[in-house]
Length: 368
Figure 1 (cartoon, rainbow, N blue to C red):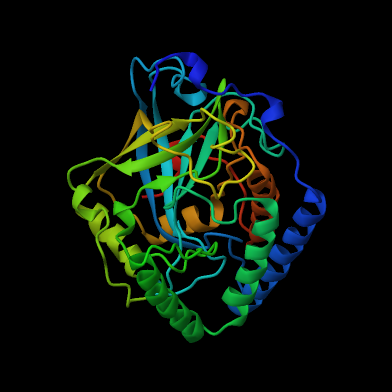
Figure 2 (cartoon, rainbow, N blue to C red; figure 1 turned 180 degrees about the vertical axis):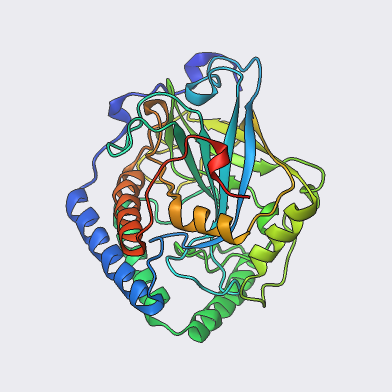
């Protein structure tokens, strides 16, 4: 691949194209999220996140931007070598608290602290934080606003209406079908819940923004890949999830004794036809544009799930990809709908649970 800057697509407003009937589809999605949130509240007498309701641990760490990055990589938050404190939340995708035996996409949400500059969310323009939201899959299966609505309606029906036993039976059946179809070369379409994914160690997964975002003068996707020697054996490692809190236990037991390192990497867009902005379900070719290292995420040993920390991370904190500086604006219809969904969910959750909605200004605000 050539090193010339001309290979990378420059960001402009023109790279986004509003989708047909997008406003109506977003309204219908918000209506479904509202119904689901109310049903989950009635079930638990407690409001949950509309997505990634179940947390598996909250962690303190630091993000070190690498020195001497070439100009296309030295953009936005990563334009100069600095070290930032970060808060990290591991989670799974459904908008309800489900047993870990029900397969679902896992999430890694990173809140970088000490980031100056106005933020895109109008409610918190002066905050000193920047969020990056990632899941353990390089694409977002519901890759546009139309499919996102369909997946939201499915999640509303499956997560809220179906008994947990039926959901776990469905997971088992679809895993079996997925394993068989994979052997004969058929890729079973995954839902937004990720119900065809295998049960792997949550700390050994690679996490991706999945959808595109602005990367300063360019367009990109970002990933976090296990880097330290103690994480390498966990990559792809199958684990048992019979216990309903198995993933939390894996996170807590690991970080009680050990530290860990992940590496942040960026994949720059080189072709808007093969690397589309408006369809996040299409994987960008790593042959055309490989992920390139930009920073190291270091997480020291700590208690990841103390009562005080759980309340702070799961109840007080919010994560939204649109809580960012303009240089990292999320792109595409999937990102535009998620901005409104995540904001509506956060407002409802904080109001119903009578918890303050605040953006931290110091890492010390996260309890030990």
